[in-house]
Image (tube, rainbow, N blue to C red):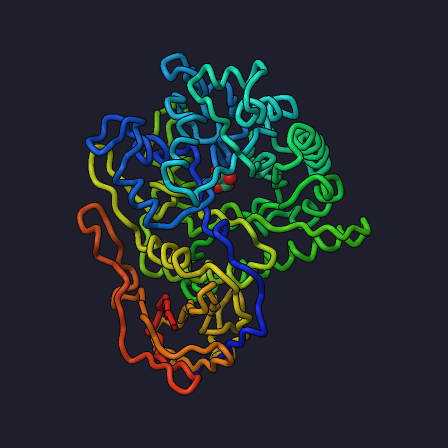
Length: 503
Ligand code: AHR
C-alpha cells in the first residue's frame, strides 16, 4: 500500500527557527578534553580548539550550545573555571566520577561558541543542585555586565573586555532525578528556581530562562513535577525543559524505530501541563518547550560501565558514553528530528546531547582524526534545510505492529517551507524489509521540480563509521522521485531517512 499526505501552505504548524538545531557540550568524558579542546593536537588553534572538529561542528549546522552540564553542573563552582588557567583548581566531579582540571572554562567556552559562527549562541546552565540564587546572579554579573563592578571588572581583568552576552539560561539540570547532586522535590526546586529567576531578571529583564522539567517521561513524578514547578515559576520563566534518550529494549528494533511516538506524546503532555497551569493562573502567557537533551543513547551499556568502574579511580577525561551509531540509530535520530519539527509551534529550543565523543555525532581520536558518525547526517540535513514554516503533515500510512506502541505508521514525515518558497520533505520509512511507496499532493505551493532526493539507508542496517572506516556510511542520492502536475511520487527504501528537496 502507498503512504500519502497533502501539503498546503494554508495549513502550517509554526516556524522552525535556528534554535531547534542546538547541541550540548558537557564536562563529561572526552566531550571537552580531546574532543573540542586539545591544545597539543597538530590541528589546534591558538586557543587550543581543534580546527578539524570546528569544521565538522560548522558542517553539522549547530546553533545553540548548552554548557557546562548536564549532571556536571550540579557540583560546578563557576569561579573555578575563570581566570588564569594555571591557577584553576583540580576538583572531583561527583557526577561522572572524574577529575576536572578546569583547563577549559567559561571564557574558552564563549570563545568556542564565537568561533562556530554568527548563528551560534551560548546556553548556560547555573548550578541549583549544590548552590543557589547568589552564585547564579554572581555568574550572570561576571558574564554579562559591561564593567564597573567587582565581578564585571574581574572578567575584564581576566582578558574578556566584551561581556559574553549570554541570553539563554537553564535554571539547574534534572533536579527531579535522585542521581542528581542536590536532588530536590518539585516544591523545593520550584521555590529556588523562582527566586533565582526573579533575581536574574532584576539584573537583566531580557534574559530567557528555562526551568527544569522532568529528566524523562518515565519518571514517577512526571507531569506533577512540571505542574508544581510551573505553579511557582510561571511568570518568571520562558521555557520548561524536556529530556529523552532512546535505545532498543530487549532487542526490540521495531519499537525502537517508533521512538518518536513516545517523543511526540511526551511533548504533547508537557504542552497540556503548561497550558493547564496557565489556565489555573488565568494567564495569557505561553510557556514554550526547550527539548535540551535528546538522542539515541545506549544508556544501559553506560550504566554497566559505571558499575564496573574502580571507585578509587578519578580519571581525567575518561572514555565515557562513547556510543558508536549504526544506520538504524541514524534513522531513529532522523525520526526524532521529525518529531521536533512537527511540534515547532511549542518546541522552540532543542539540543542534541551531546556534540563530540559523548553520545555524539562527531568522534575524535586524541592526537588523531575526527569523523562523522551516521547520526551526523540527518542532523546536518535537517539544520541545513529545515528552517522556515513547518507545514501540517497528516499522513495516511500503512502500519506495522510494535510491542511498545501497538499499531504504528510506517511513514513518519514532516515538511518545511523556506523563505524562498522551496519545500523540503523529511521522511522515515520505519519498515525494515519493505520499500514504501509515497504519494504527496502539493496544493498551492507553486513547486515544479525535485532538486534532490537524499537517502540514508544501507543493506546492512548495523553499518557504522569508525576510526578505521570513517566513511563507511554516507547519504546517497536516488533517482526516480518525480514531481508532476502537483504530485510528488517516490519510493522510500526500507529502514531509511529521506530528504526530498523541491523547488
Ligand atoms: O547527556 C548525558 C546526561 O544525561 C546529562 O549529564 C544528564 O543531564 C542526563 O541525564
